[in-house]
Image (cartoon, rainbow, N blue to C red; front, top):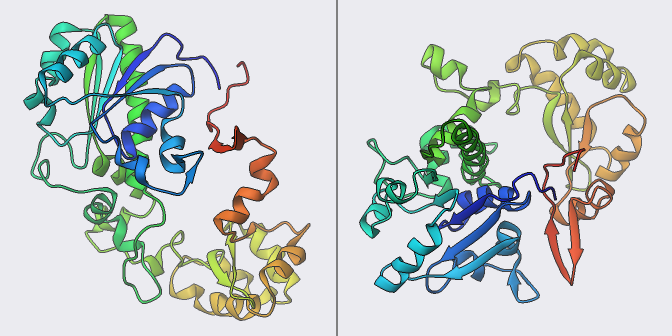
Length: 348
């Protein structure tokens, strides 16, 4: 961990994922973060499994923070929060729009006492607009952004995503926004208000596939998209043991290396075609080929070949691999595991 943000004071009023991710990135690099929880605590505390009596989820989003409990529905709790906000640099909150103002802690009220504060409000759909009052978590942002429509199974039915992308997108975007505002404050002396939505944070992540929808007004189908299963060399293949491997690079040199090794150089021109129906015979050949060996046999076969290939690991396998352990991306201390910050500075 670096001390790049040493001296920056943050109050975090958020729960679950987006806000805690934002302030975690800051805490990991020296910011002093006070996490304010309601009576009963952040619900993530109760979500197992647990290590040393603490939720793995909660611990890995809130490490390095000082956690306190305040009941903001009481006068005493509000007085304590005002005291906490004196001279603080950043406030992050994740309530539904209007809640902070009703509690007496809207941006205008807080900025009147602390003009330099950077105030970040994270919500599902933003503080204003037709969806502002619509309740939703990550899956709702996926659905309304259109991203869920292309996160589909073989039958074309949307499936629940494995990762909370809108939550994480908001946390990462929010961290960048807060740091931008702090840089701006260093020049002007004034803080700012950041209206950040999970929906708005996820939407730009569709830029690589949304062209047909935006430019031509047509629905996007995953079977025709090069990064969604429509390209033979960016695809998932089943193996003989029911496990899977992926081809994960579409460059011509990878197609040539693999297809020559498999004795099918005649299919090399197909790999150069646009994703979609043209790739059907190549995908069919690769499916029939990969199912002839187990996943680990394919790992051995691919060793030393210049092809963008990877086995699909389950999470337990992934956490045990040297790429995680030797790089210190997952550490263990006092019997508890923690993910390290992915942000590393050569200069410390």
